[in-house]
Amino acid sequence: MESEEPKVTSSPLMPSMYSNRVMLKTILELEDSDGEMGLVGKTVVVGGWVKSSKEVKKEPMPSPPVAAGALPATRRHKDASCVEVLKSRIPFFRTIIRVLGGSASSPAVREKLESLIPKPPPASTFFLQINDGSCLSNLQVVIDSAVVPVSAGQILPTGTFILAQGVLEKPSARGKQTIELKVEKMLHVGTVEEDKYPLSRKRLPLDSLRDCAHIRPRTTTVASVTQIRSALNFATHTFFQNHGFLHVQVPIITTTDTEGFSEKFQATTLLGKTSKKEEEVGVSHADRVGLETVKAAIKKKSSLVEQLKRSDNNREALVVALQDLQKTNELAEQIEAREKFKPITAVKPDLEHLNEDFFGRQSYLTVSGRLHLESYACALGYVYSFGPRFRADKTVSAKHLAEMWIVDVEMAFSQLEDAIKCAEDVFKFLCGWILDKCSEDMKFVSKRIDNTVTHRLEYMISSSYEKISYREAVEILRKVTDEAFETQLQWGIPLTAEHLSYLADEHYRRPVIIYDYPKAVKPFYVRLNDDGNTVAAFEMVVPKIGAVITGSQNEERFDMLNTRIKEFDLSRDQYEWYLDLRRHGTVKHSGFSLGFDLMVLLATGLTDVRDVIPFPRSHGKANN
Image 1 (cartoon, rainbow, N blue to C red):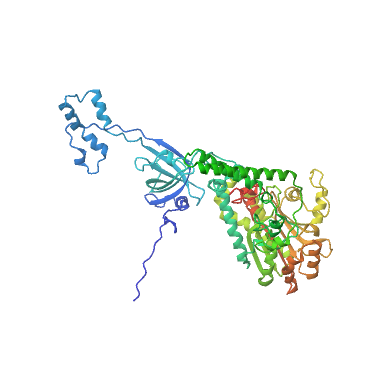
Image 2: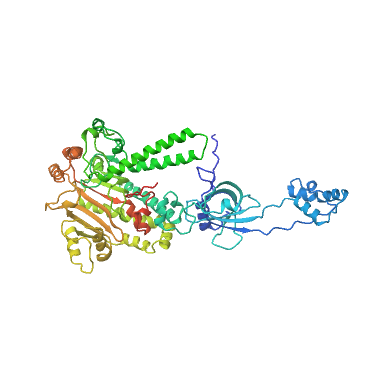
């Protein structure tokens, strides 16, 4: 007879699988859903960062009088404190003083007696609001310094981390909290340099937080945005997995210009290396070393000289350091002189130099994953990719960064209308997911950031989307008399952000899908329409955000694609693999790219993309 396995009953306050602490979300959700639900009296370990704090000092209790003939406290209580023991010995000390001829009642003697008894530090009660990132709500933690020996300077500063063991209790005073933790044992304290901690001030503006991207997740706003971003990430994969798409990782480094006219970052290992040609003509060291690098070296070497000057132990090292610093300063002067008179010339690729590079040819960080996805779409049907894309565009914009996350989609056997339908479906799905799964975070952003954000998302789901051609969009914009556009509008130029904003925010007041763009403003791979002037491309424009999704039906005809590559004056060698997809079993296919960071902007009500991406990279800014 087989023995029955013991039944395992899981407690609602079970610690995390990967540590011995209970997440605050577990405690606070149980409290909200079922009241106390037996939480009171439970011993738990919690951890988190101090969001706010206060100290309540206790009044010192007067010492009870000690009778002259009282028995020593140590005889009555084995666990008596040192102070109690000394108090019990006072009659004994008085007897000795009398024998020696002194008066035990004199002020001087009484003062000496009292000095023998050490005074305990004044006791305080610390009230801390802590958060561990598992939810937006905080847990109140109460620490009695008489029980847990900690000081105010250790635990009160904002940002201090604590890990504590204690008992869940009802708060003694009325307030927002219905449960608190009474600490019995402090397991860890991560102190804060309060004068240097960037979040010590209340309500820092978002633009100030960008300078400390490694600390800003501890703010409630950025924590909430991150929760929403994570939910959108999961929702994106959920939609495509539920609709039969395969997730494919496309390369970040590519030898192909995926659009034909984009600004790209070149990936190279040749910086700081000397080519054979440079060695032959004797290129100077000053011509290869950047001025900023030399200035950084001067600063470092100057610091070393100052350190050696303060020490008398190593005079020889000081002499060597001074000589090195002088040479570096001379090098900086050479570079500065060269920069003043250096003519501005275009840098041409050196074939011999490129052969020495890591990949043996020019390579770049990818600006789009769609071309590589076609390889898998033409074999597996429906595919998508999700990752960072890079553009070396120096444009300063609230909707643009050098590194942004994009969802790329490719579908075989589909045309432009199919791609538009899929784009509309995934967009509405993401809006609905946020409303269903992120209610707590949406309440916060509605209160603190934009009180219309929930209504806007609901409207995105329920409304129909206007579909117009590029030609119709131009005609509408030309008739506008009450708006002065910066860019002169004429057929054949790209629609700018202000044009798109007017159409979605002012004219239609709902999402707009614009299709059939002029062939000159879209990538070379977009399918040419029968009119020979427009291509099968589209953009989905959303109020307050702009173009969130761009897509197209791609050119499946070999001859037509070959002609387009020539029109864009692109290197044929880079696209031989892409032309192979048309040589060997061509099929109609379409796809689109969704700006994931712009989707987070829409869901949070924020206006600058730098505030919704964990570590923003833009022109001149890459601090972390």
